[in-house]
Image (cartoon, rainbow, N blue to C red; front, side, top):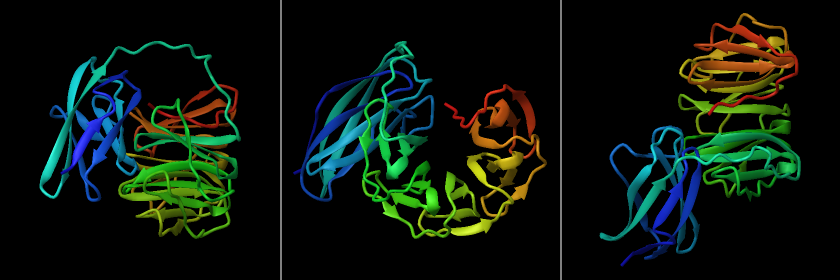
Length: 316
């Protein structure tokens, strides 16, 4: 019969942070794991600020890791969870109490250096991915403890996204890597020698942009060029209004589904380096401290020119 035991029965969490607990399993291959909690509380992965996100990852024979993320809007309190292991009609259960505490203020100066050089960071499916030179890829569920991942490439990596149950990372010389679990990475045969600086997933499709054509893929493995912009593009984002890509000379492109791309009227001549979608719409940043805003990804307004160049932006 299957067996299930938790390394800890109580797990403290702060809103906006993550914690992990180890599961000790017995029963052999084909064991199925499930997590149950109060109605409306649990969500696979991460993304809902009012819920508790989770992911299960097999780490070794007889072991698994449960990662839990407390949304920033989750109220303090004790939340009971029940874990089930089943195999061939027989099952085992274990209980876990998640204690969400009020957030603790921490000093912002407590930083540690990292080597080699890191060139980008992304948040996908509940994990931070830090990417850099020599195929460097580090992952973390909470941004503190980082795990190096072997990618099998020496190319610089710049950005990553998640969709269709897999992670995609992009980089120099048209490098595209795919992984279902952050551990084993497969290199996709490159379509172009041009560098890829940004990638995003939305509407059931991956999109990658860079110094060459815009690429699209439904599964992260089979890619095709769908448009060739006039200049280099530095970033791409997905939101309810569709995909938005930004680039050199204030380039702004919009696509509702990632296939047909329309150039938009420029709102600036400054090079644009980063774009993101948040609760207030799309925001793009670039040289000269340029900040642009769009509620729908189509009509853009310059809202600031702050002086120093801005090269990246995130929302959370």
